[in-house]
Image (cartoon, rainbow, N blue to C red; front, side, top):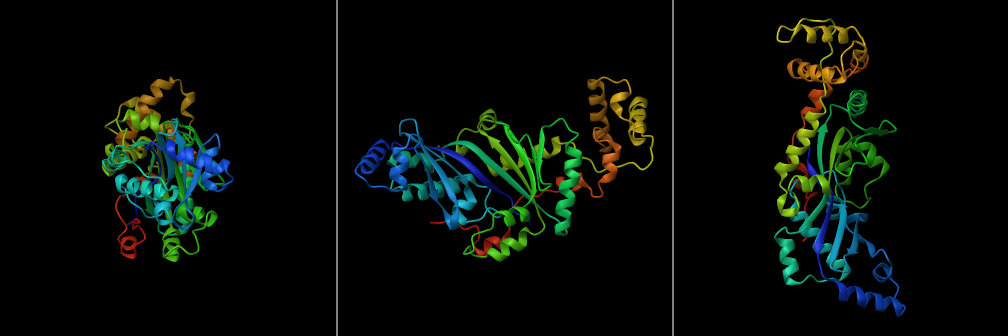
Length: 344
């Protein structure tokens, strides 16, 4: 079973550390130079806290030393890799806060720690990840190229990098969707050589297609997700599934026009023109009319007429079926090996 998980998160922890800041600043003035004293004496109050096997968490002091902003790849910070992880947010946040405070030699008050345990930690970002195991590594590239050919004709802002990564609304402060082959990323950013079970993880990635949905603060707030305790795996799965469905992907590519009795005559005419390779924007329909008919046709026969006929013929794999086959759950082998085990 392919794994699903949460990757990068950004949280805000209530932590009155004004005395800690002042003490480290005084140490810096006395000539004690280290990463912590330098960070606390800088105007940015930002420090990279080391995690497992070379991973890092960016930690920033804000609001006059009363809160800590922590951003990191949760599974990578805790286990050294982000191929396998968990969809449960609260246990990971708890482990991250413990590790950050331990490194900074910073103690939360009993009230502050109770908030962390109760999930009363503000959440400003969470990345929901799903994986598709393909038949072979070549299928990963084929799916990405075919997906790009369809998505570029949708009403979305898209970008891509070297035919290896595809983004939808990459720079949005609301949410963005990312598709790529995990093996290519692992090759570009190799796993730490001392990471346990590294070879197992690398082999698993060879034919792994990754979908990554970045949910930012504005979106989370609109959904009523303010704190860590407001998040559930069911919410993440639902949002990712909904975004995939909303793309309106298609597998159907008509070799010959066929009349569909459950559609009107005008919609059948539009379908015939599409099958003949005609640019539907030139047939006299307004953009609103064309959009309405396109929605009806897609709902009834699964064909997205916004994607030109010529582009559909270039795709030799069932894009919609593959992307919609996304399943969620834990990888039993990774659990048995202890790959996803959180630190104490």
